[in-house]
Length: 84
Image (cartoon, rainbow, N blue to C red; front, side):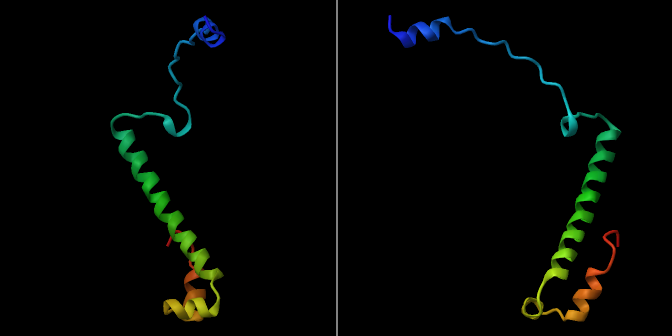
């Protein structure tokens, strides 16, 4: 018997354990699932608006001209709060 066969035959397999649900892996049922899903989607929309307004604020004059937005319009839009 070779060394590799000896090592492999003596290896003990660990039994698989059930994973605990932690953080976003938590499972909800019924109405809670729909409400949490809607809240998560709403948060994602607000976060996307915030990211795009921050990006707009950081653009240079030639980048704004390239996308067809005046500097005044860009600054006004970037000053709008993310919830609007």
